[in-house]
Length: 329
Image (cartoon, rainbow, N blue to C red; front, side, top):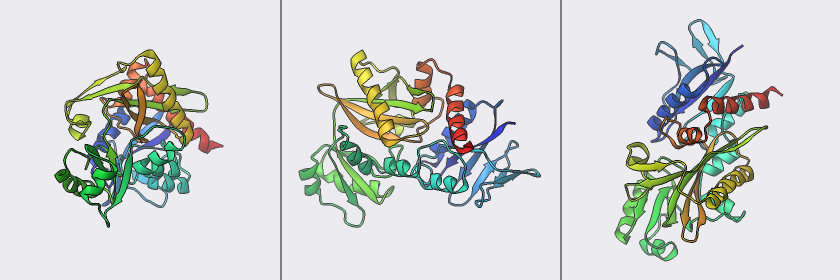
């Protein structure tokens, strides 16, 4: 009997539409001969399943079921592709665990920790992983320009601590840009991370593991036409993405080994993407981890799957079956 997979998208942040585009990508990637698929759009106003005829059916939050005609549907598996709250920060993961519904991503703790960029970086520093110098600023208190310059220096990045897709991120070069950058970041998150600028080669590397396999994809090199890999670079083509990256075999292997190690240190699940910057002396610096990476046809992960010579349909099946097996025991 075919299992039912709900592709969970939307969410309550500025990344709602980005997430909906990822849902369309995932819908196209999953094997429809093996699974019944529904896209479920979440927002503050409503949770709704999109039916085959384009109509919508309200989700019963008591058990995550909905009606498709006269049939009650309760998904067997949730493929979470929300970029931002509540799907990337552990909230939705906790909900599905309460309902005993398997899902595609890291668990509650890991999702929450990776969503907080500052928390993640401080944690991984304890394992010897290089990260940029940074500090955390809360909206209630703010920070003076001189303290930013003294503690982090210029240029620097000011970014929401809990957000993605480069919303509210500013590369700050002069003191008079600090407060406007903080204002933009605080519009996305109550906590803001101020991070030292690192000059180097930016990389993205995807990975997933199951009980039977460990897969680290080819690395993507990111060459942005802009000051940094901002929203326009990510979603409006103002970037050159090279997969596999133009790195020596030795450096390539070091990056891939680190990606695999980070996955294991955190106990990740499903597909994650680790972003790096390579600075002078081939030093590998981790920027952040995405536990619900973009999944449109042009996103990093599908590019890397293709470069690896894999079929993304098989990758999706691996993720779904791993989750279903865990909950069938």
